[in-house]
Amino acid sequence: MTAQTITAADTRINARWLIPIEPFGVVLEHQAVILQGNRILAVVPAATADHQFRTRETLNLDQHVVMPGLINLHGHTAMSLFRGLADDLPLMDWLNNHIWPAEARFVSEPFVLDGSRLAMAEMLRTGTTTFSDMYFFPEITAQLAHDIGMRAQVCFPLLDHPSPWGSGPEEYLRKGAELIRHWRNDSFVMPAVGPHAPYTVSDRWLAAGAELAGHTGVALQIHLHETAFEVEQALQTTGKRPVSRLAELGVLGQNSQYVHMTQIDDADLAHLTQAGGHVVHCPESNLKLASGFCPVQQLAEHGINMTIGTDGAASNNDLDLFGELKTAAMLAKAVAGNAAAVSAHHALAMATLNGARALGRDHELGSLVAGKLADLIAVDLGDPFIQPVYDPASHLVYSNHGRAVSHSWINGVPQVQNGELTRIDVPDLTLRVREWRNKILS
Ligand SMILES: [Zn+2]
Image 1: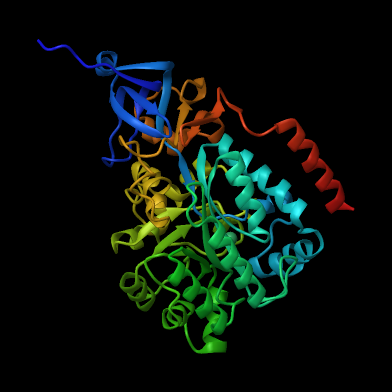
Image 2: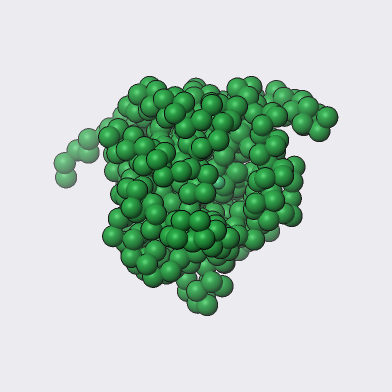
């Protein structure tokens, strides 16, 4: 018998259950995740770890499931300050008569700073470690994400109209190019181009946004085919469905992310499969605004990478991605007329590895594999009202709530410990949010 070499490392997490996402559909029991610096050094059976590693700290999570941190691929973080401000309205009424006027009055650097912090606190607390944002003053959100240590794709907004952030598309593109230059090599902040939607950005600026994304190598994210009305109106004004128009303008591509996609015909599907890109499914926003239903199972069967997002808290009204997974899995079955559509494991992959793939970072995020970045969470399945546990994957999607997340690490740094946020002062945040409520109400 040869002597075992013992490797020193930082942290050992003993997990009752572990869902690594890679390989797909697997639930392991009694595993140890070994962290060293900002990486996962090993994922091995606990008994094996005893012989192989000596760590500075050990955490025993004996009623928990450990999995990769969740990736929320679409939202408008600062809009958390508008949570519950206008409900029960269709998209265009909601935007034209409530959200856009409120934004014109209140959106500013301090608004985005406090709103983004509120959103990040909620996302961290409910298991999200990477999010995507599309909002004004993206430089504020980018800096905050970097300072807190959360991963964020920050899409600068591009639209024809002026906003509190700029006078119009030329200024947005100039500021956006600066955002990309500043952050493009950062591990936490992924700058991206965010043309709002086909109906708010004219051809010239859509093409310019795609050109900027193309030559800088960053992603582009756009709301697309959110409602039947959007498609009908486009047919009347341009004679084309928005997907066809975007294909002609060079907006579709491997680095593009299409948010919503509730209206899809065969020609749209052909464009998407030919050009590539990723669909971001936001089921709760679609349900709340009565926008329509994304055919998730059908798109997945055509090889399209399906990811998930909450959208902003003004149209959801929370950022709990576990809740979104339950809605996505259930809605997919109803839409497909097939109870096997979007299984629990499929839903979990949408919120992890598929999201990482859309960000071009599946080589280092989205699954618990040795060598990847240490972005992971633990979910406490000890709650009496989710007993008994036969299948942790089923519980995560169908019985769980994001607040059962007990621990999270991003880049190896603890962000949630025993259900408490480590890097955000929640009492101070609550006071600031109350002040915003009073201001917005008055
Ligand atoms: Zn949105």
